[in-house]
Length: 452
Image (cartoon, rainbow, N blue to C red; front, side, top):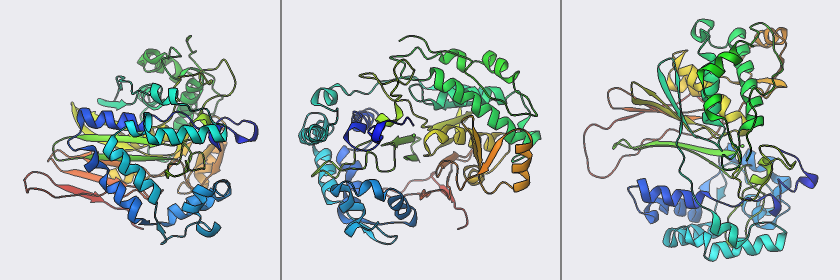
């Protein structure tokens, strides 16, 4: 995140970037979907209109953002009734949002990009000093880009391309780790965590220098994901001592989130991560709509001349990591999680847990994690104090934190045609199998639930 005076790029109308998700979802549904937009949206409309019971996790999230939400009556009325954060067990009803979703179900994306919702959004921006106008909405369009495909110990790893950072840098980190016997080093040992920390720092150094919107920056994807570049970076790692890393590439000219992994009996699979950046976006509601705008401007660098600097039409770089892993051409795993900059290193660790450490799906998504961007090395409490001391001995500034990134969820595609779902303790994510319609054979779904 990049700071600005008075947090204007984080809270309020100036923090809002042009919204593209609705147009992308509608286009995706037209091209690949099996249901109408109205049918797809009906459950969301029902939950907004009738409400749902707030979980302890949601209540805690509201409480942590209360000071900013109290600045806007619209959002405070929804999440802080009477000025008090909605308590666990309370009912969250969003009537205006239900009407907004109903309008979209009837009119499609036109409701926002050229219709009534767009008019209200632009009017709100004008009144509050924001930057989104009708031309910005009209210019929003989805872009088809090929996914990043890497390889790791005979597995094919597939992830999103730039401007997302995850696909490139997960492939890069796996390439570096491929030169070490991670399985023999063992899960959760000081040697393994030291290697992970160094590899993550390498990725973040290169990410800061060169990963951005490829329409504006010539992102060196081929070099970053090459085995030769991994050899160069691996050779510089000290197995016994932490280092400071600078970028090994340069730019050319030119993350409070929701993840869902879903599959059906026909073989359709979706791993999607979407976000309005912070948990409650820009911490206000567009009057009369129930819409909470994003605060994506906080992900741009306010300083000119850098890969992530603000430019008209530039798409933001994110760490979102909807990932898939294939073995012998067959899909084996699909996974993802929320967590800002900590997302793609966490997805990397889950893949290693599955491939190198032979964990079950549930174990892989729930296993303790680490994260660093180059300064402190954050480790979760499940790692012992002795392990933390060993990492300090290797030169890491190791600190224990409650969680690293958010609740991961995943699906495993078994050889017998069954699916296994898993969700972890760090959020409200839950594996669910849904049946219905005409009976047919051959589709089974198993769920793994962690003890609470």
